[in-house]
Length: 440
Image (cartoon, rainbow, N blue to C red):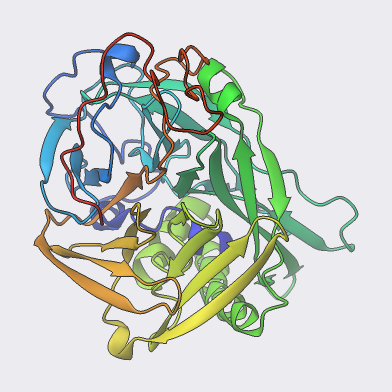
């Protein structure tokens, strides 16, 4: 079942817990965090990030559902544990992922699934089997540098296509591990639009659900809507991306479709045997290698503004670098050899200021950087704290100002010559602290 493949690809500990749990898994996640309490559960100016030049931030999630907030340089040196994320109310039932640092207010933003399994969708199966998969909202959180977080609203999945052929259904789940900011402070998120058909022979006791190739959908949330969000749905402008005109992109989404339908066969058969969609889902997640495939994260280039994603698991013998042009809304893909699927499950993508795409893979103690001109992976020697999964954020933009509340309160921010030389760029409040990270 295609959307399941893309949903929360990083939730390794969920699959661990599936071994011990049956039936509904309402108590699957983030019970109480044994954590250092954050200083401020409503992130504000006092918890903004100030040292962000050539620096990245990560949330690591371990198998015990602990969430740790880490700061380090974009070359992965200078790793600092900022906080074990605290238990600010309301506590999310799933880990916060899809991390991004807003260049406007200098606070992190992250997403969390709202369904019980943390995969972004739930099933509603009955007989005859028909429109069975429903995409769920995703909660959006604002996070301070002390680990304090606040739910500021939710993102609604893209609307389904009107006028589909008879017998065709659609689901458009949000991939809540994937998000990135641009220089204007707009947040971009990812979803997949997937059609599927279903049929049931009640007399024979058989059924079939077949998924078609997915289409990438990218949503944009304006900085203004983010800064003013407090509760309720957050306006998102969704745009469909052409991921089939490029032959390499078409091949990988079709491979993804084929793997999804293997999973779908498992799901339908398990449901016909048990009559329990939740038990069927758990069984198939544990037995069919599907959850780690597809796009897990993407990042906005500081040079050309394109979206870059990396699919390291759909093929066993190669990886795929995906380049989405926001001006044409088209995707171009490059295949890279990966004998034995050795690169592993991607946790996070983050750009450095030098346009190096930094990649961290699950349970690996070193990171890598990807050359987006040719897709080659280059190891970074510095050791990092490994985790089963997590997510990261970079803020590589050069012309960042220090407006703490998103308002244009910077006196003489353009100097006197009409160019961005930032004379008195900080008003009269003091100088920006010098960066502690090397250019990378």
